[in-house]
Length: 270
Image (cartoon, rainbow, N blue to C red; front, side, top):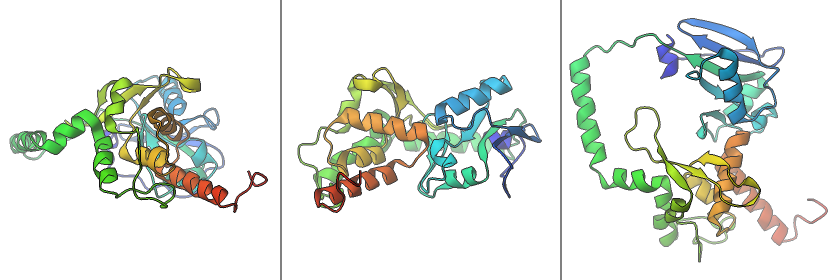
């Protein structure tokens, strides 16, 4: 909602900049700024560098990573640690325009036509949503709980659709407890289904990240038949850092693995 607080309902961006730029939108004003200094930076660093340049940690930044810059067809547009507009390759569209980021800070009021009625309706929704079993499970495990249902009933894709169930998997949602530092929620949401976690071992030990969602369980667990939960956490971190779609990456890795197993891809190809 930061864009609305800055006085705009939506943006239409046409054309292409001569070089890397980002948009700075604040209380009814829009500026085009040089982004050559942040071109090549990952999703996390881009947001922090823009906030530092603008001198306001409350600025909200939507950006692309290296994947978008290189016009990867499944590059994401990202905000925060893991919020992604994925699947459709919008990150590549921004990259094609040399648009690295859109930074927004709004302090303008948002008038509510019927404030009392709105508050009452909001209270009803909170009570209704919060009382459901689904919400209570999501608050504890996030979307990762879905794996227990779909894998048990054989509704998953394993080894690039060669199997429909993962046997002996150690990627159930309960494993997040070992790594979780608590949970976060999207703006205005009472569920807080997103885990904040820290990787424990290997070259990424100590790395902070958020998630993973069920899709990352699928991408780096089921699809490639991996039974290591920490591998899923690392994979989730990397796709968010580079700004690329998690499920597309997992599907392509699984496809390449099957091609290699069948001798279609060889060591010479890799």
